[in-house]
Image (cartoon, rainbow, N blue to C red; front, side, top):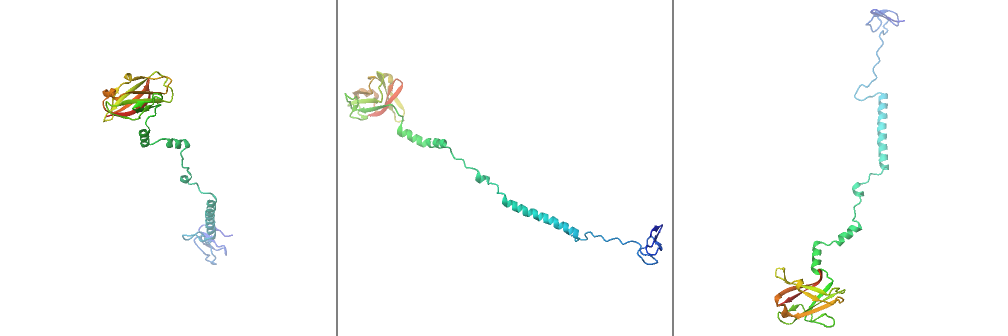
Length: 235
């Protein structure tokens, strides 16, 4: 058995005592201090031993497998829908379309009112005489000469008058479009038959001298209800 005593070391081969710092036996030359095994760890920037290379290979293989799996799954899962394309474009409801179609523009409304004018239940017609049987005017005209001829007018209604008196209002239309009252309703009462639907009246144009000349509008009322109106001129 070889051993170590004090500052000496016994040779494992011949038993000779050697100094503790001796590397080989001074008697037989046998190595006394065992040689330290060379490190098997990596000596450079990249490891070259087998175990390290195997570990690196396994890690790279795992990374590559994950990349391949990701590519496969990306082909199987459908892409998310494009929100801008899939969002439906709102369309107007039928009621909204009908409202838009029925609503006329301001220009159309103005043109319509100029052409059609207000709708009244009765019709006022001017002429130069009255048919005694039908009470309708004869010699239909709306232009008169001051002091000459006969001023006649008749009103037709689609229902019986249902009153015994109608009222006539007359205004003169001035050059600037304003109206000047020449006969008030309270002064223009005329008798009618309540069961009739037509009434006619005539007077000499000379009787209208107080109205002057120009363009006029006559309005026929049943109480406060406007039944008909018409225009004529006196020159």
